[in-house]
Length: 636
Ligand SMILES: Nc1ncnc2c1ncn2[C@@H]1O[C@H](COP(=O)(O)OP(=O)(O)OP(=O)(O)O)[C@@H](O)[C@H]1O
Image 1 (cartoon, protein in one colour):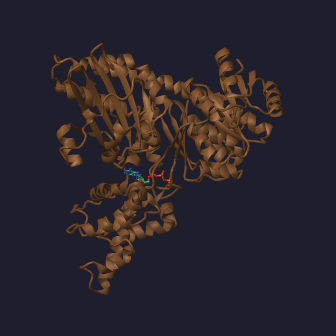
Image 2 (image 1 turned 30 degrees about the vertical axis):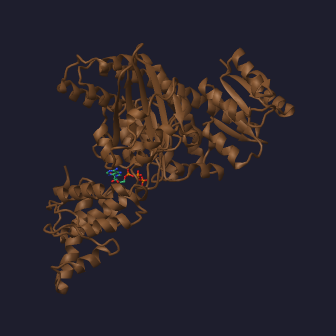
Image 3 (image 1 turned 45 degrees about the vertical axis):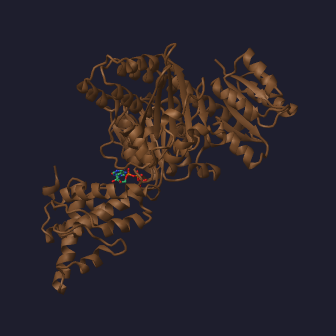
């Protein structure tokens, strides 16, 4: 069925032009409105799937006002605009449009933008209804547990985090003669600090400051507060917890009891209508749950509570860090994992993009299927097509038998396309086809094959810029960008450095069979001051070097600015030239062993130790024999 489009545009010629193009492309144009008022009437009459929306319109209200309404009605919209000023563009961007076209635009761009908007809208609806169902199911699971008052709220807080991120959540339960407030402050991915009256006194450092109970009932309807429309009753939360945005969700439990959930985030513009819709869709389940919470006859059953903990909380055992920027990225991973939506992971090199992709796979229903990684930058342009799509016997000289490509190998699982920004234009077109049709055709094959794959792509490039430069296709960019996740740079989350360093140091000490004696305070201080252009990978290498050079008796202590060699000159045990040579040989030996361990003793091939060390396999073999290293010791 063709999509229904409403055109809201007060320039007659532009509107007519649009109508012609849309009709020719097979869209059903439901009408043309010249003002917001007219648009409201037309939307009520025949609900369109998509609205093309001019920002400047006849009458008092602008396209941005209409956009807010479209958002609440879940109708996709694309702005059309001539050169608007920066403030207006910022305002428009806040409404989260499905596309933006600057007049005059090409017909081709209009049609691509429309197609992408429909695709994104469909995907967001699918994941939205999936989310609603999931939230309802999980709430009902908590209601059916027998728990203590605080455990109910704690479990609810943890559950809600995976749907609506917050840094602090306040639960307020009020009846005619009393009011009880319980708050939870997030201090780790799945760690919360309970904040009652006494804890609040400690945080605010005063007995007399406002308490949660004085917030009082804020509204009858759910409401979002940003800085500009800030409610003064919330100012003590803003001051003590650095909250920048709030979502208040009130509901009546029965004629006597009113409930209020207050989500507080340190991030600006963290909440949207979508969150209100999600909470509203589960109102009945919240009511059931809160009836349990207020029911004093519920018994303590800590065992059940433990079980629940396991099922609710995905664990990121090997992703270290507690910085809010990292926790935000992890929240998004948890949110998107259950669906088959494509994900685009952005971030500088070495920030953990591959780890994020692996976590998305591990948390999805595809977890038992394959996780296939392709580094688009590492495969030569002549080979990438057959690598990705496979080939048939006889397709080209040397194709003595058919071979499956990475897409087919990933069937039933996830394919991780790293460095997607490096794909040639031709490969981008073929990838777009896979995304659209979910089918592939191998080199030399004559029929397409369906594949069931989820695509997770990553890049350290600014893809928007690459699109503007004409290096990356806009249609592919929007297809991939349905759900972007940004991994923060290490310099933006310096509070995580010491925990990461500790984690890597213990890991390498285990690997090299050395005792871990801690990290010197001076080294921690230096690491905190450094800028880490290579991010976590650089930190990991730095710690590895420190462990190699450590004698196993003292704390790790390596100067960031010194090379490993000059450090070995500094070590206490080096007195003569002979000692220097020995230290060098020991260092070289440890380093080669560390690489052999990583590649499972493999010497040759692209993933072999020689290639990583950038030396010939024969050179490596002779070094190994000189240093008494046996490759079999490092093969499983
Ligand atoms: N939060 C983390 N905790 C522990 N280790 C991490 C974390 N993030 C990344 N690492 C480690 O840092 C190294 C780099 O991570 P990863 O390969 O995932 O980064 P990337 O962003 O994909 O890099 P590139 O862009 O170069 O491909 C890996 O060894 C990974 O195990």
